Image 1 (spheres, rainbow, N blue to C red):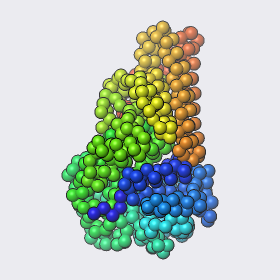
Image 2 (cartoon, helix red, strand yellow):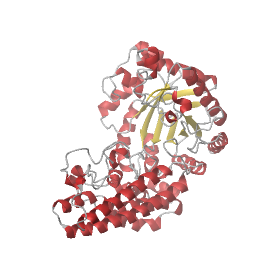
Image 3 (cartoon, helix red, strand yellow):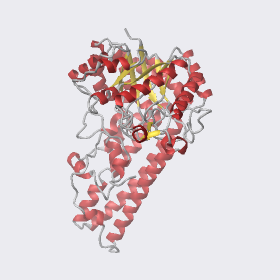
Image 4 (cartoon, helix red, strand yellow):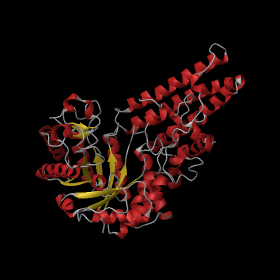
Length: 531
């Protein structure tokens, strides 16, 4: 029996959906068969007592959230708030007002009165906004808790005990306002297992399990595992707690500009099948915007649709594909073309979740620190991807079309940009001035198509999201544009004999870092320096 079949959407990672888009998303999820939507709000809630919450970030007002809650209820869905109450306070850590309650990294300082004043202000405000009695209190990825200001003030305290102490305090406050909590489970495992979450042999001390409040549900999140023995072991380990258990999978929207519906479903088919073996009753399919919110959440609709079927024990057949088309106006297989920009020799069938299109867009053409790996998988046929988009774009309903145009322009840019560093270095090393003159023209083409991509990305953003947050992409794409212009200028000077060398191109490339990292970090692609 399924008690909760929900979707989690993070609205706090650089940008967030507009109220209008959230309503549209709610409608789609209901039509797909989901019964709840969790809104990952974190500091994106405007709180009277905490004026820096949502400040300059486009935070949602109480009226916005009340409107959304009423809308969801009127449609027969439950809207559930999710906020961080331990880690992931990175945005607030920049603000002097909160400096004294940041322990280390982005983690709140436990046992500090102001910390619990903040937590109560958050929960009190959420109570005004949501009719649901559920709240996701997160508690994930707080790896260094107790090792910063807390250590200086109190000395070393067993971090498992410390987290459980904090959890009980947060739970009391949540219960005071009529909320029942659930939380991500990873920190229990990491503290018990030398920092490792996914493991086949994790056993918990009964004393520790007894310290977890009886009314707090645990959410086992796993976005990549396909080893059935590992999955089974993780379910068994979670069930040791004898608490309400959720399983959270994902449709990947956090690996660059394009989604990974196909790769995510390869994992979900295995994960959800294993979950059924353990009679899991609560499910979440998550959407994350890591490192910029580059990928539209609406690009994940095929994955979300089929995931709903899988949770119900059904398969995607022609009848269900027809239902998907009735809902969206787009053929299911045509919708999957949004995955296309990450296709390459290492991911020929798109069954892997990777980040090719982002890493190759930002890979510096003079430093070439990803080129050592890129050479192994060339060529990548971005021209054929452009043609695929050109064929289907006229068939796409207007409200979805910008997603396709955006990725079409990205592929058009990458056709000139992706191997620019390799071509430049090769021609420079051989002192082929004729080839360098042709490559200089390619820099101009890459810049021209980059501006076209930025324009369509901006359009998609403004159609779906609050305006706040696109400044990050203006900075990144603008920086790339200026860097390409500068590289072109220096190449021109070299060809004309006005400079004798280009020092970056003199270096022999070493095996430095895989071009296609699983970590979606702009700073890991653009430069070897700190940015």
